[in-house]
Length: 316
Image (cartoon, rainbow, N blue to C red; front, side, top):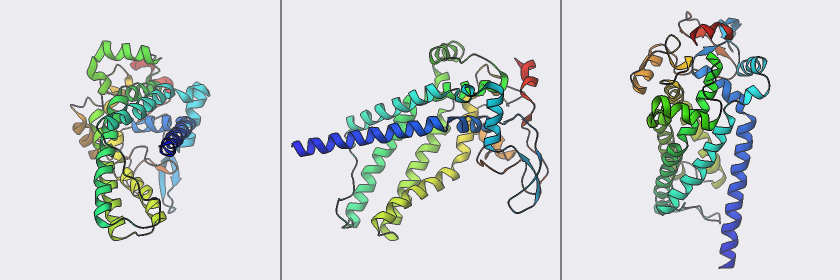
């Protein structure tokens, strides 16, 4: 009993250490995420300039993610690059703690691989897939729902850069702002596309990894790498839902970034998806380095707002 208790304690400590490291990495990379959010919203502080694609074709290019971040720092200073970090970290902690408690309360314990090198049988592999998929879906859905209000606050704090507002200056002040102007539902703006994206990613990744492990990959180490590669692939495919989530999270607020003329008044997230798809804008922010303003050899068609920051003051 003592040995089992020690193993469980060590496992829990190791899990919290990994979680702490993920938070630290997330905090360090926050300026890049900040830039990515503004790009997803369609804001470009500088006009595209002539450049070349990776194949040498002349195209119009936008600043890469690092140049974009440098522009934020130039405007708001070093600490300005970390706007929205606090609610993001708080949301991550809420998601981690509460989702785990919900899964444990429902009796959804993870089913781990054997410690020896003996591969699982087909029946055991399927049982592991079924048990872990159910747990992962519960963790994903519950984690998103409990942390989404903080996600809304985070995105809107970042979006204030566009119109230079100060509505969302703290977590408490943001809660008051959202509840006063939008009610309870304001805390869940953009929730549906985020749920669709994350749950679809979990299901598709788990199912694909299960099929690969059953029919293709037999090596235990190779299976660990296949899970990460598969998740990355499906995350890339589902990226348009991330852009839609960001847009719908801001819409409905008093921010310039969520209102015409900057953003159309969408009826719902599917309307937003259809509009961005028709304009070829579902991949905004997907590329960190080479960012063509239009497709290779295609005319400039995006309606992104290319204006220096001060020019937006007239919309406040």
